[in-house]
Image: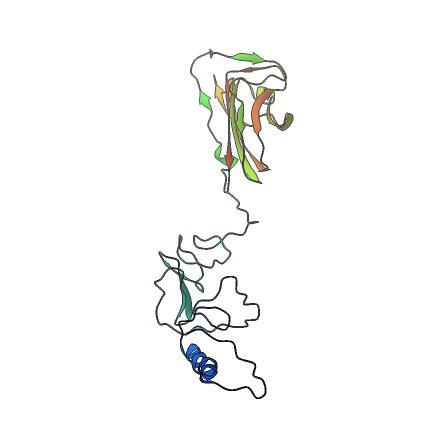
Length: 262
């Protein structure tokens, strides 16, 4: 039954059956039914798209004593407001639900909380105190072996390593080792860092860890090693290497660099 706009009556106008039926009977019937079409003066059971709720202060949901089971439906279950997304019920008032379940999240670092965008982690790194050793005593009178001499500014073979951190602040750990004749020779080796074609000196000389002795008083070889932590390295390409800062003879050396990202 369609709604008829109310008539504007004029003086001395004759009230007919047709007028009464359209203005009173039919309009009363239109108001009594809920299967409206939605046209002007004829409400609908479905809200029109784009409707504004800017003047709505509060909404009170009747308790349905259960969760919704129809996709897209929002309803109250006891003191909770629940929404069904088509595959699972999402509690709109639930916080920190299990991983993989949509819910409100508090800020934190647990498996079900949300981490703030400006949070940081402090990774635990090895201590250089772990680099220890003991003297080695060789019963031979002399030690023979392969070696190579380097002049100042030369990179020791096999000691160049490139890493590329990807976070805003990164920790790069550099581990290096060298086998030379004397402790003085370890002082002729430097640890270098190159980024954006700019080279800087990280450390001059390696730390003596232990000796190889021909006799108690005669040193036949010296072993040096260091563990360097380069913190707050930004996103870039870094190359680390061992470099001679004086003429030096090397029996063996290596360098390893790795990125710790948190």
